[in-house]
Amino acid sequence: MAAHDQLTALDATFLELEQADDSALMHIGGALVFEPLPGGVTPGVDELRRHLEHRLARLPRYRQNERGFLDWASDFYSHRLDRSRPLWEMVLLDGLADGRWALVWKTHHCLVDGVGSVGVVGLLLDDEAVPHGTADPPETQAGDPGEAAHGWFLHPPGPVRQTAGAGLAAARAGAHALIHPREVLERSRGVVDLLIRDELIAAPHSSLNLPIGSTRRIATVHVELEELRNIRSALGGTVNDVILCAATAALRKLLLARGEDLPRQGLRAMVPVNIRVDGDRRELGNKVSSLFVELPVAEGDPLRRYELVRAAADKQKAGGQALASATLTGLTELAPPVLHASIARSLFAKRLFNVTITNVPASPSPLYAFGAPMIDVIPIVPLAAEHALGIAIVSYAGGVTFGLCADRSSVPDLDVLKDGIVTSVSELLALAGTAAAPAESA
Image (cartoon, rainbow, N blue to C red; front, side, top):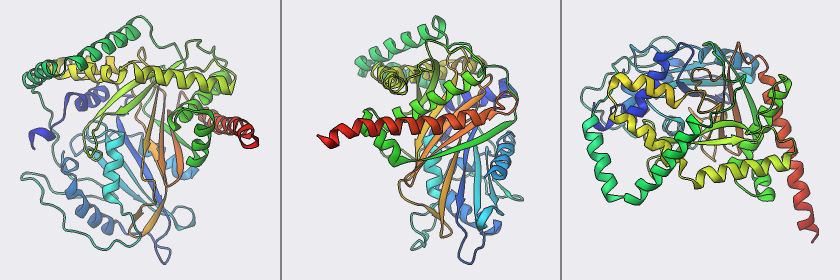
């Protein structure tokens, strides 16, 4: 394995989180649903193996060691990946309604983050129904294990290695500080802000942050991207603001349904931020930092709630918090391996945040596999210990899917959250229509 392809300290953090608590399942993934192939058939698993064998040559790291459908997926994502094998699996699932079929995969977070996983999936799909041809895959590095598969679960055998390199990381950090002093100052200020937030202003107590089990439940909400853009255009802000506001309203509805006091300071969401540079979208490993955004769940007025969400997100983006979070995580490179587990737990502790909300854009145009159009993507976000709920959002071909992943035992009311998202989007659309009406009549 090349040095640049070894696990970084941030990558290894996700292994440590899982090792420290049986309830933490740190794989990400998604389910890709397709229309039937010509003739109403599903590709065979041997055909899928050949397809993956050809495409996976582009991904050396992957060579390392409906209600019924959602119920099946919930069970699939409730089981850890086998660490004696490479940390990914893919299943070909047939027998869905109307002849549809699905590719369902999970990959350990130590190998790739959400943005990287979208890039990976893009390599396995085509942008047209009948590709002009398939180029020979590039040669793999010497020593890469082969891609033997078994049953319906596709993944090759082989070891996974971690990297130390603390001395080299320290030298690089020192050199970078000399060359970029302004950036270091900005990072330092952000780190202080994060430490104060963690130690003095902890995330509020919530029923979302209790000991959880390892069994998951998945639900989805589908909306049109154009609707979110219309809200953005009328009310200002970004599509991400609209998504965060819909999640905030849904969390408010969930806490109210539980008879829970609404925290005046808001629930704190960890919002991952992609820090890849242009051209690195398909780069594996974890190239991500975090913003910690206060979600105003105590605010009952939809318009005011939207304004507060916008202000909270803008404040964190302007304050250099993403740089600070990356700096804190980067410090783990300097820590001895024996401390990685405790550092990992502190970076994902319930004291720091209540819920993860991640938004990953996929392809704006339809994608295909074996000539069949992909019609849906269901994203999955991992749950750390004492975090009972995560929300992943993916946009694809004009649609947006909210993937809700929850601990089955402590979140039996996941449908309340689902309904809350639908209601919030409808409320915001009504507000957008009201805001646009005066402009049209002027």
